[in-house]
Image 1 (cartoon, one colour):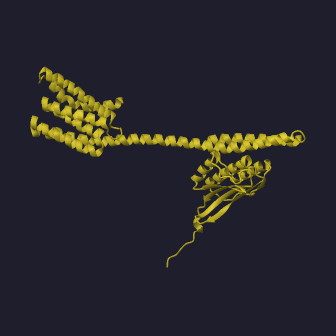
Image 2 (cartoon, helix red, strand yellow):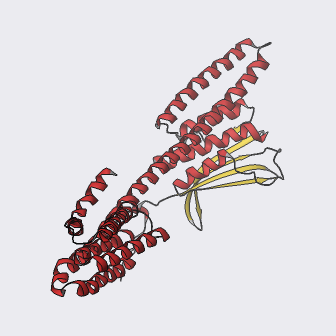
Image 3 (cartoon, rainbow, N blue to C red):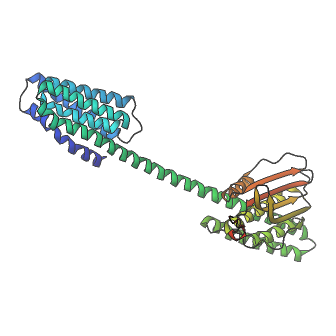
Amino acid sequence: MWQKLMWVGIWLAFMGAPISDLVDGNHTAVPTVLGWLGLASFITVYLALVLRHTARPPAHATVYGLLGVQAALAISLSLTLGAPWLVLFVYVSVSCGAALPMAMASWAIVASTGTMTLIGVRVTHVGDVVPGLVIPAFLGGFAMTGVRHLIRTSVELREARATVAQLAANEERLRMARDLHDLLGHSLSLITLKSELAGRMLPGHPEQAAQQVADIEQVSRQALVDVRAAVSGYRRATLPAELAGARTALSAAGIEVDLPTEAPEGLPAAEEEVLAWVLREAATNVVRHSGARHCKVTIGERQTLDGRFLELRVQDDGQSRAGSPAPVAGNGLTGLAERLEKVSGVLETDSGRKGFTLIARIPVIPDPSEIPLVSGT
């Protein structure tokens, strides 16, 4: 604020002509007092316009009112106190360039300069007005429109940077929410299942119960590692690891599992990671919500009318949701849809009499070597 005030205050040096006119005693007591009051009011209005409204949105009623007061002071002081006060119109032009939009400022600058010329013809000679004041008023006003544009651009750039920073922070929160939901949902479901198994085995099969407790410890340690990696931003899920994890979790829940032993090779890292997260969340949902006895997982390419897609399909025969409408998307399905959207994929669900099916499709970009060449004749 003080730097801007100093920069604007330098230009107040051109107020030397009206100040000298008052100090030299060229007027009687009453006009002199009124002159000082008018000059102080004019400078106050000028500073308010230049300092407070240069970088603000398009002009409003306050700006129009201040400009009207400024123009009225310039006209009345110039007509009553003489030629030294014509310099006020230069400040009126600068204020118009600083506070008004470009189209309106252009007309206001021309009108201010024209008014000054007409009054100058009346109180002095035309030859004294044109080179001394008309050119500075005209050029100063339009130069200020350029300054206003630069200031507005700087303000908008600063606001855009703040918005980008906020969006980046929001995206990081969403990433952490998705990762923690998917990681902890899967791990905690597995820990719960194995804890129940250990409780049932403990009286008659202590050795098997001990194995389940050991598995719980292993899953807990791995969950802790995964959470730390997710918070640090280095967590990357892979299909082979999630296929093994899904087999373990579904088997522990007593669900018969039919899934591939190996993941497709040559998948881009981003697409593989998204499908891995989908598989993890789908397996967790089957364990926690389906009540199914059998679950089938397939991964492969599929040709459709819209092109070639890599499809992950998870189907269970759970009866608890048979005949019910498609479930409302919760945090898990919403997070999966957001992940797939980043790789141009789609998520589909189907709840029917034969159970629940979750399908994730990601478009396959063809290898350039596989595209046939068409030669001209």
